[in-house]
Length: 207
Length: 207
Image (cartoon, rainbow over all chains, first blue to last red; front, side, top):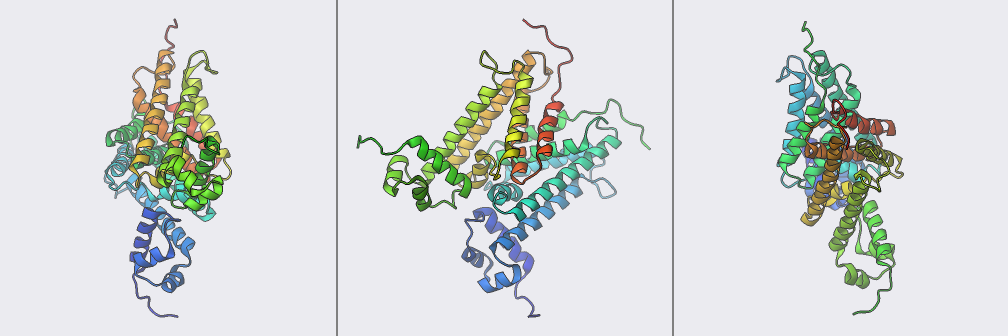
């Protein structure tokens, strides 16, 4: 009570996430978590609750990071590395496909893993996954809007629909990567999604 | 030896697939398989080999069915219900999104489940998944070719790239459905993929 914890929470959560990522929820026992973190059962339960709560926690943290990264990469503004919204979209999709392809061993994205593993059994997990999908689709839709404002994408395009479409393409590339589909195919799939986005006929007047 | 088996193989394999689909590879013990099938350990091992072999078998059978169904729905010819290749593509995508959305409880596609569950750990499983992805993308690419021949889709479109793109969209819709993303969003995502396919400027001459 009030005593300083004898461990670094962030480090423990990293270790726990890696454990669940590799072995899944069912494949991870409380004993596995004790071994991986070097903590006693009592310390784990007192700090984080039971296995379900711990799984929900590391998944939620992961999703938040994923959404923050997506927003940072897709958003314009003074911090943006790439000035054009379409260039940012292309960089985002292609670098994800690249990352999925380069992974060894192939674990795939933790969001996909957890969704396939537990979303059907644990409504709290499903809710976190839904919010992550919604937020990611929203970040993509915002980038499409920016591209329309910049005169890069046709005005008739529905940013929300296209946001979900690009999200589903990314999820699909992740699944194919997990099965070991080749890098060339993954990159071509990402690029072909971008090619299909209807461009504006002529650039808008800037300013 | 040479004795007639006292069980129906197809029924047993159905039961085994359902078990793995619900509980996953790690979450299914040999005892679970005995309980589910009503067979003794010896009978199971003699007929199908160990748990890995049984998992690989039901997954391979499932993928073959999935590919056969895709080909039947997408292929033209005398048996085709819908005469237009694009109509068949639309029916295929929308009916898949519909099926994913309607599922209760939400289990998602067994191909996605197994890929997330075991493709990183079992190269035989990864190989089967890769072949299924390749075959499904091929069936979609063939439908795009048919649509080009029928003057529905622009000739500059690369059927192979678009085949993989539509496949990744389907995989993504499945993942979103598993998380409980609403039916309307799933259907809109499927339709928005179809809308983006560049149409031929004018219908080709038939005949």
